[in-house]
Amino acid sequence: MANWMGGSAPAMASQVADGYILLSAANLRGFLPAELTTFRLELEKALRNTRAEVPPADDALANAARNRKIGRLSSALQIVQNQLTTR
Image: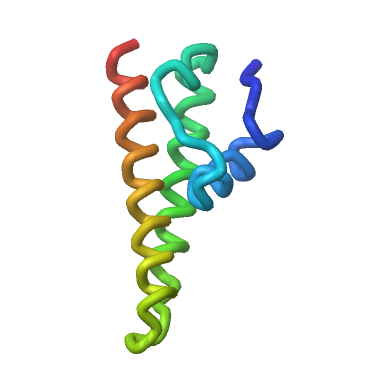
């Protein structure tokens, strides 16, 4: 059973998006492939939701925050996908 940081896969994906958790291969070492797949699906869902929220064009701070969130989620997806392919 996975030890989800934040309690569950959706909560962990949200915390990754907000920058509270930085993922690495060491963080994901104890997760089973099925749990990593669940986490990947939650990250993809969070990424879709973040891309769907379009701030006003003249709000530079909101655009920068959205882009940082997208970057964190994209890099987390790459790390999870790498963990899945190396197993």
